[in-house]
Image 1 (spheres, rainbow, N blue to C red):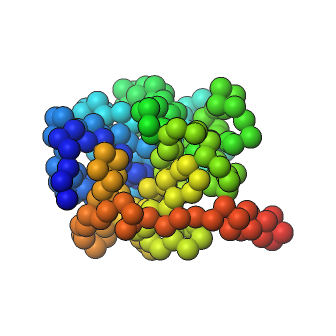
Image 2 (cartoon, one colour):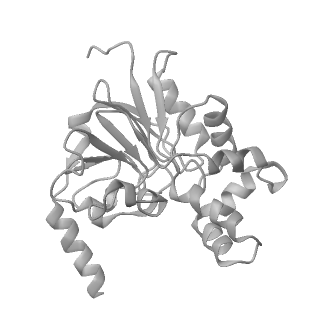
Length: 253
């Protein structure tokens, strides 16, 4: 497979798996001509969140705000260590993040960096955000609540939100969607999900997508496996009706 000399590469949710990220980048071998983008959720659940943040920040890689970074920021906004925001964050993996920092103190420069993260990036033909968009709202009316947290309403859209660009997301582990196995990517109407669940024991796959050459690079953080696949080979198409049906079943439960 021939590749162009300038690549745009999107990295899915790392969740503190620094060694896995290093192995993934070793497989991708990015050059100074390439552009790397991170979809957010650098932190929580995995063992080395501080290292991941240091690496992405130090290299000035564009990175989006994920729901896990937003949960941490909510703790700062609400203040105090016993408030519900703190408990929610710790329960969702924040304890591992705290433990990854020396003396369990997150430096101010990292907190300020989190606060400055954008909620989306428009690359022209591709549009990056952490979770998706609300198809019922105009873009200007949407906030981090939609960009960082939305799931079923976005996954079940019947036509692309943008007529001229594909939305690339993380946030929802792909194998939780109908018909998708661990490690596979999921594609719907105008969107592509590349969060393959690096932290999850059912998966372990961390994904980098070369959107220039339609190549998928993956590292399994548990089994130390590395593989490269054509995008078409790695992707499962999602039926919006199945998402809506799953949502209805949840509401009845």
